[in-house]
Image 1 (cartoon, rainbow, N blue to C red):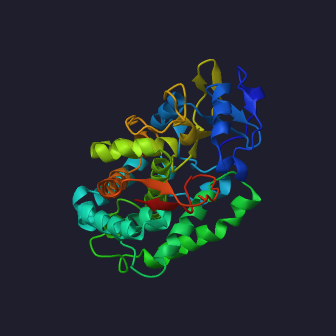
Image 2: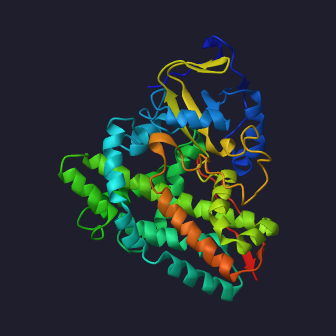
Length: 401
């Protein structure tokens, strides 16, 4: 297990901060906190949580690549209870075992399977946007961002097409919240985790999954002895959470940014080739996953500081995307920036396996929108629900012309 350390054990002092980074107020507006933490140094000891944090892009990205020093094997959550419950998840593994399970993951997400379930994305997106344009006003989360990810990703996994599918979204958000630092709120999310695991135990069985689905391919790997039953269930859980809610958050956040920047939307309309860059820019500014944790396997030097071996370290994707040392004018939304080096999808051995599908869905939706809509405006108050790990919108009233 990772050991709790203090800055006094270091050979050189690491800056300390007692900021309540995971309070509800900070989660709703984390960016001033991130800027302050970036200014303190390449690493910061978060005294309230007994963890270190990396907040600069050029420190976060190498840590994601360097699994030998920043290990996932003791869990990527920020409390021991969640890390124990996540044992067997691909997110909480290092190579070589991680590569074995990841191969099953990648085999199940080969393009032919993705194309089969995605069908004609352009047509689906076009039909969806046509209906919204006729309405003129709609919710950018429930009506625009949610439809394709829910239908496509959950079909891809192979979950039965029943009423419980909709509950998966809330359970997944609760499961993410359960990964935050230990607190009364974090503990209160346990029922969501238990409901998700019960659903997987009863609905993600080989005989109930849709034919030819991701889930059935995963169970076939169990039959061949490549992975265990636990690894199969936890793999489907990881994709159910990371493949749906985060995609919805990325698409709706990008729509929110476009609604606030009509000049940038005009550029997208004039040149649909900018859709890809606009989505990457939306992810950079509003990373759907704000942070995960790692544990150091050795003393890790960063400039003139050292993080001791055995330390749990928060890797802040949300802060890395706003790092002024790496991105000029980082708080400005610019669709032509096209930040291909964003860490919003992770990086290294744990890069998001659903990146291609999420990108396809987003590109289809925003291309359809660009062909039909002159102007996007906010039509009411935007709502967020704070979450220790993810960042997204719960309501986004939109008016289109």
